[in-house]
Length: 344
Image (tube, rainbow, N blue to C red; front, side, top):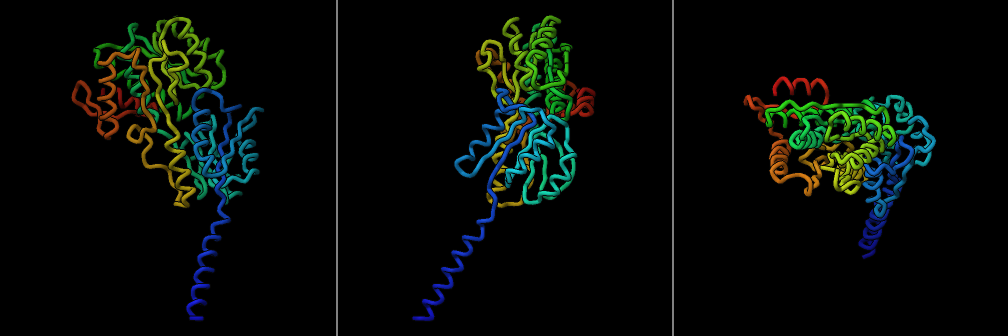
């Protein structure tokens, strides 16, 4: 009996020690942005809201950049708060200047959002949403609904992430033009900023005056200026990242979604469950990471039905058919867009 009690005591002690072994795990999650704040009614605010879902599960921190400092300075400040998992949102196409800091802090897992990898480190990865697929649907919508034969695109800063929106949209417009047997012109402009509503209003007003009746904005807060012009001139606009219909219900046809909650949830779950960290396998229409939120009061049923048909094809990984019987895929950069046009 004494031997049995001793064995039970040993087992209990081992069990308790095993339970204590995870105490050193750092479950703190943090989000840092290069933008001045998270209040853009779009991408940055959506990232902030997505991370708040984990606030009851673990400690969640956020850090904006009100003093407009370089990203390296902002991330250095974030590192001092000792997160275990650090999500980073920046304006640049890539941020190789972060590599020395990442190497200095192997205890932190760094995740770049909406970017491709700038370097390789075991505690670093980049993730992005296939926003070109949602933008293609937005372009198809614009191409089907334009009455002037001219639509617009306003982007923020030149980058691969904006290229996904831009060339997906241009391809969608061209695809709709093929269906209509009509050449549809796209006035595509870059604002060079994500935070100037004034510049967005100026650009949007000029484009509407030049004949565009629908403009797709992928420019953060700058795009909100285009929304103002759409309301004043009684034209249409397509929003981005989140459903922006409420900003102007009579003028927002739809919003091309870029739902990073899918990415953040999968990456955070992997981290908290202590799994091997890796980018999510699917971040397109199939995973609902992108899509098109339609304003059903403004979009006719026959157009909605056509959009749903195309959406199902892209979701299933199947190619689109051209009038010539060729199979084509949704492009995400200029090179693949030019190839798309050749096949079209």
